[in-house]
Image (cartoon, rainbow, N blue to C red; front, top):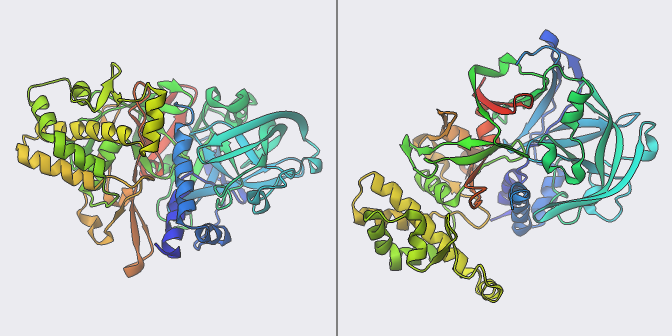
Amino acid sequence: MGNNSNMVMLGLVLSTLLFSLVSSAAGGEGLHRIGLKKFNKLDGHDRLAARLGFTDVESIRSTIKKMILQYYLGAPGDADIVALKNYLDAQYYGEISIGTPPQKFTVIFDTGSSNMWVPSSKCYFSVACYLHNKYKSSESSTYKENGTSAAIQYGTGSISGFFSYDDVKVGVITVKNQEFIEATKEPGVTFVAAKFDGLVGLGFQEIAVGKAVPLWYNMIEQGLVKDPVFSFWLNRNPNDAQGGEIVFGGVDPSHFKGEHTYVPVTKKGYWQFDMGDVLIGSKPTGYCAKGCSAIADSGTSLLAGPTAIITQINQAIGGSGVVSQQCKSVVEHYGQTILNLLLVEANPRKICSQIGLCTFDGSHGVSMGIESVVDRKERELSGGYGDATCSACEMAVVWMQNQLSQNQTQDKIIDYVNQLCEKLPSPMGQSSVDCEKISSMPVVSFTIGGKTFDLSPQDYILKVGEGPQAQCISGFTALDVSPPRGPLWILGDVFMGRYHTVFDYGKSRVGFAHAA
């Protein structure tokens, strides 16, 4: 792939939700609105990241995906509205200010984490710090020293530094004495290429490093918002001047249509809730028929889910990834056996252990050598073949179950599973699609709170460019989290762009309605 492709992928690999506030103006109905700027071209940071090569760009994407896994191993009055900027449907970014007089920073407002951090003027040896705004405590009259060291690991990326206190302004709201991290180290290329300077976490305090009190908590504690609610409206039209808005303290009725469907938060940390089955072209996959977990994550631009179902989705939409030889080998040697066991109603969770490809831990299959350090080392030296074979077997079971429920013949089932093997996503999860076939792709639906939420191809395909140079990427990416924490789905911007999302801290729930 050339530099143009690298730059296109960069717009996707920076999968965090980024925001930008620029100028403040009072709006109607007591809502404080902030004007928008728009970036329509790749800037110097993008070009720099592109020159670093595709491997490094892929590592950025891996970083964002691994961020997700890190912690798993109302009325419009008196609300503050923060405007968002949309960059290629993949980046929404904006400004906050810290200190007195104010020092401005572009940040991510991320419901998938809970700490706030910005680069420090004491960051001397990281390239990323030289390309972004840095906080200068010596220039703020409201700065208070803390000094406790802090570090956050984001997969292949990380930041470290120390805690400080200062006033933070978000829109027209000023939070007093907010604890945040001054980042003194941002190693690697992850943050070099980013459009944002730092991050504001909007998750629960339970996952905050150092048990720091999140900015959102202090907004409530200091009486700065009327209701303990915030909401996101994302404008998915990259050519529109307005990128969207985040509303603190309520919801704006002009942002949505109809009523919200609310589901309770099941595990505080992320905004996590229970989700039902996933449908492809109105046909149930059955994978989440007995329930899956999901989180609404403003910090992920794509929609992530278990490889078995993501592969089915990408096969249905014509996505092309990396051919998995292990998968095809499992089907060739064990496909008929798996099918026979399913036909005699064997326990699907135990089939892969019964045929010797996995062990059974009481809930699902695991790699045969997973309990042995020696075997684990051998598996690492062999490229993890044992783990891949076990995973391929479990996916084959899921796919065959789905086809049996549709009364397909055995030959058709084996052929279908082989096709899915060829459509397995690449190691970093992305799949490209034919832009000319978008109109013929199926609707993909998610069951939440007993209601079905549809995504059309226009919702889940990210298209960059026009004409012969256009490139189209599937908005679905693979992410596997084992029971009991999984299966887990991450509903990022692809989903939140279609559905206005309310984060109700007071009632510990998440709500979705059609975005206006």
